[in-house]
Image (cartoon, rainbow, N blue to C red; front, side, top):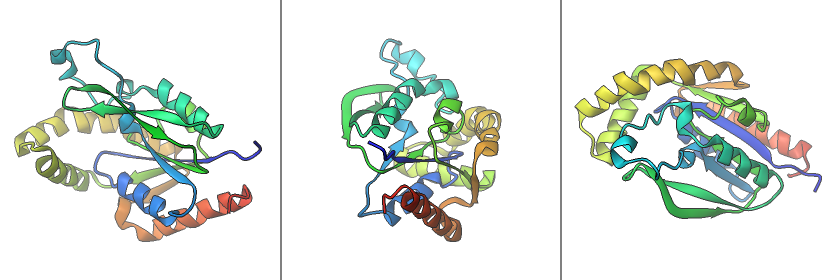
Length: 211
């Protein structure tokens, strides 16, 4: 098959609004052939480790991700082959036995905090986006989410942010900004930037005769 799906990488720190950007782009192409692939689903299987060890997992470190499997799946999707996406169970801190059937599409949006960190992943992307949002906004968004959706206390969210999230962001996530083709400030609230992205993606699709 001469056509090859378009791969768009969307990176950014936790609470940056990258998921909102991804969903906005996705909604703009509803009715077209498009799928979202979240890096969060590709945390490494840790079933061989004792539960106590799994509790210490640093989910903001590059080594937490099974990028080999993610790349294998993207390569399959690029050949228009279906995949079985893994499911990660945070309650037991390892991969679930369940999987999700994913059919290939013409546009693949790959979203996650560290999708631009691995050169192998970057080389598969037609467009690389980084959602850049101030640290104070990101921590407030994360705090609201973790307290409301995950039953966390304010103290535990702040402790995790200072001990893990912030240093990992500065060491691993922020530096990947230099690989981005386009930097989107303020995430999902930046409707002008999102509209420009949608227009650019449509141009790429037209060039590849998808539209």
